[in-house]
Length: 151
Image (cartoon, rainbow, N blue to C red; front, side, top):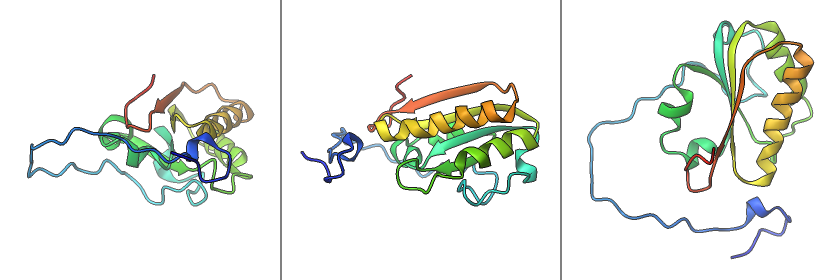
């Protein structure tokens, strides 16, 4: 195993061993997505889906690593996705602070991957919440590269 040369341990190539299952199901899992767009750069801070909402600020990779992400994390929430490593995040704290201050929010959940570079998203959300001046319940969830919840 090695990394991609960028020095981030989260970029190290890894194989995730899984036990094959023979179970099949004809039932498709329904999407829990309630709005569009979802990318943090694109969501309007005053979009109606943020009003009186529980918000999920989610690292992009979480949805691919965690097979049950829609059911366990997204259901009933407004969504904003971002990648703290690959996105231009210079405006993220200000944008999140605007979303938090312009809306009546029930809660904020941040879902990140266990890799070090992903922690930046949690830091940005906390900073934005502080800048907003609001007291909104905040929960941080860490997902392992194997798709399992770490906390």
